[in-house]
Amino acid sequence: MARTLLGLLVGSMRTTASSILAVTDLTSASYKLVSFAALIVGPTDGEVVLVSTYGGGGSRRSEPPASMRHNADGWRDRVEARLRQEGQLLERQRQWCADRGVRCRAELYEEGHWPDYVLQSAKRSRVDLILLGIQLTSGADQLNPTDVRRLAADAPCPVSMVRLPTLAAF
Image 1 (cartoon, rainbow, N blue to C red):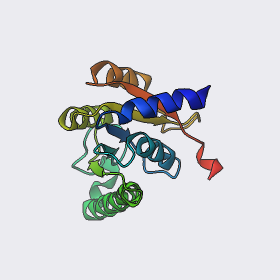
Image 2 (image 1 turned 30 degrees about the vertical axis):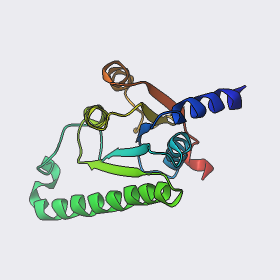
Image 3 (image 1 turned 180 degrees about the horizontal axis):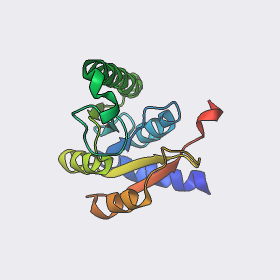
């Protein structure tokens, strides 16, 4: 039954040029989400838009936290190194799609409230579907249900949550 529904979804999405936005956290598990988006779009005139937000889900932090003010230069160096690393990880996911003949674009946003960036990208790119990967774990990186509801309510297209394997499975 699930394969039949997946086949219907993929088949109906391919009848027109599809654009799918995949919200990636750059973990190995998020490749499942990227591959699902690539499967739906396929080598058509559609496009996968990968969106990732550097850092946590809080507000933008252009200044070091109080505990790091004594070493502001070291803090900035670490932030820039982490941003470069995340950019490289995002580029690998984009290249993974391209290697399979799927047009793909990647957007990495600095630390901020991730639903805002996803909504901006979705509206600007006129995507047909937003895929949001979730992992059923108990950890600090859990998605805030209020953010997910807001994303679903304000999105210009359907939002689908995709259950990802736990990181321990990799």
